[in-house]
Length: 270
Image (cartoon, rainbow, N blue to C red; front, top):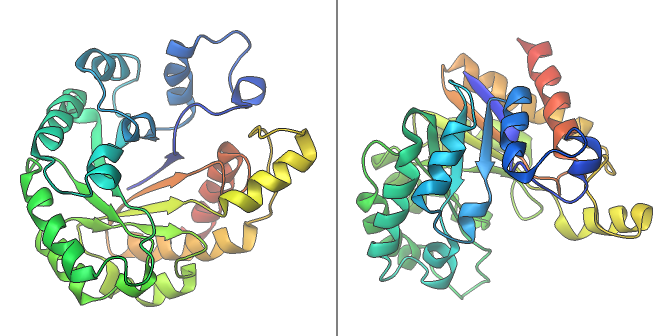
C-alpha cells in the first residue's frame, strides 16, 4: 500500500490553479479528497485542533481517506519534549476523533546545531513522550541531523514501532543513501517519506516569477531525484511495507504536480 499526498490542503496560489472558482475554505478538504487519498495536516503544528474541527475534517472526507498530523510545536519546539504530558494527552485525544481516518502523527524537530543538543539527551526526552502516545496511534520522528541516523536513535524507535521519517532535505542524505541503508533505517512496519526541499531557494525562484510567493507551478525540476525516490518506494513495496509520502510546496514549487509525477514514476516501476 502506498498513499501519496500533500503537506497541507491549503497554500497561497492553490485557489487559482487547484480548486474550482469560489470554493469555500471549509470545502477545500472535500475537493482535495476527490484527487488524493491522504494529506498531512500542517495546521496541527501551530495549535491543538478542537474536537469540532477534527470531526469536521472526518465528516468532509470520504471513506478510506487518511490524515497524517503534525504534533503541535508547543511539544516539539517550545517545550522540546519536557513537561508536555497534558498537551500530548489533549492532542492524542482530539486527533483520535478521526477514528479509522487517522494515520501517523509526526514529531517534526528543527535542526539542532553542533553541540547544542546531544543525541543521548534528545532520546532521553523522546522515549517517555513516545511511550505516552496511545498504542493505536502510529508515531513518526523526523530529525534534520544526518549524524543522528545511528543506533542511538534507531534502536529506541524500532523498539516502539515508531518510524524514522525519510526526508528529502538539503541537510539529509540523498535517496540513494536511504535506499542503500533501508534495512538499517526502517524502524517500523510502515515507512513515512517527506519531500521538503530547499525553502529559501524555491521561494526565491517563485518570487522572481510572480513577484510574490505563490505556489502555482513547478519552478525546480526534481525529476531525477524523484526517480531515485521511486526506487526507494519500490524496495519498500517488495518488503510489503506500507508507505505514506507527502510533498511540501517548497520541494519544487507546486505539490500537486509532484504528486502526479511521483505517482507515475512509482507506477512505471511496478
